[in-house]
Image 1: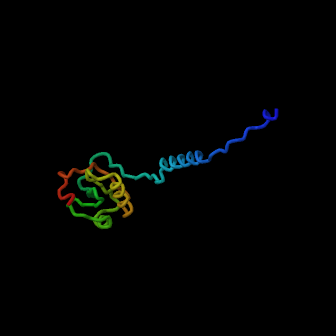
Image 2: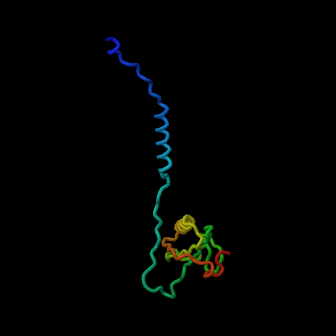
Image 3: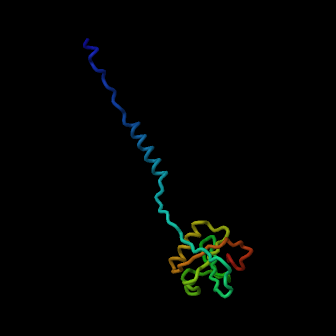
Length: 135
């Protein structure tokens, strides 16, 4: 009768399996979490209607390396663009076809940081259409 009332000896629970599960969950959440901050890039929408012929064209080309080039094919910096362009007018950025998205966003942010309030994005330029571009 004593043998029936005696509780069997409990087996110790190994924490190794629990630690493995916690480690796997930690790795899962670390790999699936994104620590970057998402931010919108504001672009000026082109005006509807016809463009005035006497309106100054403020066009700048953006290479795949992030360099700015004017319409004559000369490489320019954002501070130089401040000297030759009117800050109140919109600047049209025409990226090269091989320009990566992050390079394009960096170029737009560079122009905005330089002081240009309105930046417009145009269709990527092919190397054939652009005289002197990419030199």
